[in-house]
Length: 331
Image (cartoon, rainbow, N blue to C red; front, top):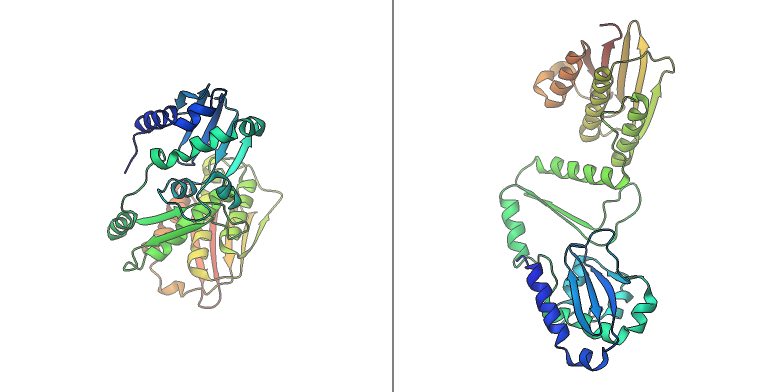
């Protein structure tokens, strides 16, 4: 159920301004603070014990004295009528090392009693962001429509397999969903590590190096790049084609090859620039494959044709695979 943020602000102000404890002790309760609830941020301005303003759409430069930051789940747990242990108060939440107090904490300490009383009012006012009434039902509905459900919350893991505290689900009755989930994981890891190459960059060498680094992180496969130092000047569309064929070849290696090593090489050869992506994986009988029926192969062929180039694949069972793109230097 989506909460009306303006309605929440009005309700919170009413509860705060009518609270007898704050009225008795809050004559000098004057400060401005932020509740950072991940899904929603609000800035509350207090003056002489009364709520002067609640900014429900704060901008980055809006001022405040101090802030409380925590995950959406912590705020939800705290706002329950009867919260679970370790969610029952500001200090209990901080003991979980999830709630963070930032800014001018002297102002917080000077107003601590009134602030704590006001903070408890969130149990009556609620938290100003969407709280699903039937999370299980919503998840079941998405899965029934063959969607992918992802849940991320709290601190992230660190390292090459990092994806954060997460759950990923898809319908188990569709065999292609295993690959779909792996693609989601790849995209998220690439975002976390900020290793996505600039597809429009004209620095092909740097782009290939980034691509190989991203591949190594996502697959844990040893990956090397061998680029000749005497590459001729290439047009932007030629660089784009080389990059995307390398990207497609690495994607296929990650999904199918089960390799322990991959090499990406780029060098001039008899009037062409030759890209080779080679792995030592399972391989396949390339003579028995209908190559153009494979979407990845069709994509590589289309990229090659756009720059008057050619693509070929060599592979044998248990002998690995080699994808080769030849792009003419002169057109």
